[in-house]
Every structure is written in structure tokens, then in C-alpha cells.
Length: 247
Ligand SMILES: [Fe+2]
Ligand SMILES: [Fe+2]
Image 1: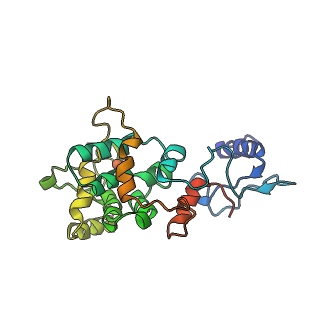
Image 2: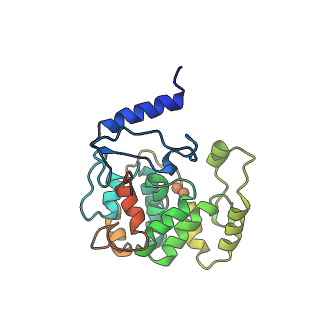
């Protein structure tokens, strides 16, 4: 019987996992939808092999005490968008805290989880930044869906292309927007959306190091390294560092 495309993908994946010393079992969230998460996992040829419990050799090795910039360089996807947003925010004269918010606003989409990326991103950085910064990051995702002419912010054309002209945010997002409007830090989050532009100048290459000082002043790097400091989000940084650990 011919293999289905899913079976072929699983076979290829199985062959790849055989080249590793350790058995890798993907977290349900990696594959949910591509496969039915209720089904048992295909059997692994596990004789004599141990399961992955640390560094995945397919990924670059992180330093023992990783910093925010190490995650940008070794785990996150391309960062041109957030670097350009932060540069634009600086040019527009916003506070350093908001520049930091712009630099960090999409890190979850870049390196962790896309859906609800504002919430996940805020949680990642919450122990290390002022509450205003994490609040602004959390809500930028929601505010992006709602125009505010008083800040010159229009509903993004890109969202019409991406989600269709008839897309409407779900009721809980609408409620989050209503509440955010009333909040004392509404403007901080709105300013992230105002500077949340894609390639406003495609010829400008922005280096991460341009923000070394801003990060140094407003991001409290733990001395143990991100992931190893017992903070409420340390486990999330560890998961980005070691995404294929069995437990
Ligand atoms: Fe975003
Ligand atoms: Fe963005």
C-alpha cells in the first residue's frame, strides 16, 4: 500500500532521528493539526538508545549563561523587523522603555509560539522589565487589530492580505481592546503598534548592538543566564534553548 504524505513525513523524520544519538519526540504543539494529537505516537526504534534530555546537536550550542542577545543570535528567527521597529521608535523620539518594547514585541513569534504571541512574549520578559514594558508588549497584538486615528494608526493593509477583508477579531480580543483603551499604559502599547512597521526602509541594516545600552539599562539580565535563574518564566527560556527535551 502506498504511503500517505503524513506517513512519508513520519518516515523521513524517523530516519533523521536515527542519525541523532538520542531519540527526539516532538512536543504535541509542534505537530498538532499535522497529526491528530489524540492518536498514539508512531513506535520508535529505541533499542539501546536514550531519549533527548539536553542540548539538541542540530542547533547551535548556547553559552552556559545565555543572555537576551544570545537568544536573538542563536535561537530566534530573522530579527530585521523588530530591529527596524526599535530604530523607528527611537527616531520618533519615544522613551527608551518603549524602544525596548519595540525590540522585544515579537520575540515569541520569532522564537517560541506564534498564536497569542503578544501574551507569550510579555510573559517571557515580565520578570526582567518594568511592568509598563511587558504590559505594552502583551497588548500590542490586540491593539494592532484596532485603528486609532489620534495616533495615526490605521488597520494594517497587510492584515487584509493575510487574514481576508472579512476577518473580525474574536470577542475576547475585542474585550481586551476595550479594557486596554481605559488603561493608564494604553499609549505605551499603542506606540509599539505605531512603530510596528515592516521594512520601512529596506536599505537600512540595523545591528542588534545598536540597542546594547537600552537593553543594559532596562532589561535585568539574570546573572545565572536566562533560563537558569528560577524566575517565573525561566522554564520558557529553557524550552527555547532546549526545545526537544523529552521531559
Ligand atoms: Fe506582533
Ligand atoms: Fe511586529
